[in-house]
Image (cartoon, rainbow, N blue to C red; front, side, top):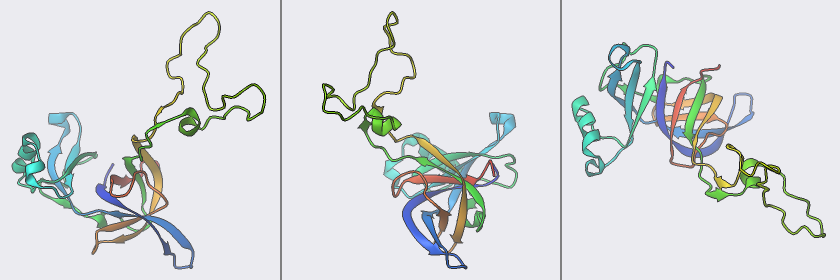
Length: 209
């Protein structure tokens, strides 16, 4: 991965292309990210940079994280993320990464935390089929059979069952940057990206483009 940035998902809107076609886009506010630490292969076993993003009051930062910011001589931030890169030589502690690191037409991957939906059943969670809605003796339409056959008497590991749905790390690949507005720190991404409004997302160059 050569370039990446953290941003806040603001919501969706639409823009018009030069030929008049309407393009649905997600607006990401990517304020400057500050590099607070650089990791290299000799010391840490891999190359990476640690960036900070988002405003926060100093009294809400714990001592361990505050030590990281003081060592880098950087103002405390809300979110820390690590970006693995091939070469760390162009970067230095205290350097900022701006939204104009991306340009119109770039292919990107967006990583975020999907919207949590709480405890759900197998139909909503796994898109399973419900039982027939007949008027016979069957009065249970959304329940799941846990039987595994005679003589086994157990539920196999990995069986799809009801449970917590959403709230997981999700990556959408090969999206396209429609527009970049450095004056307002905005990146317009074609289509939808994971997460609710005001959630933090990571934008990186596409690894499968």
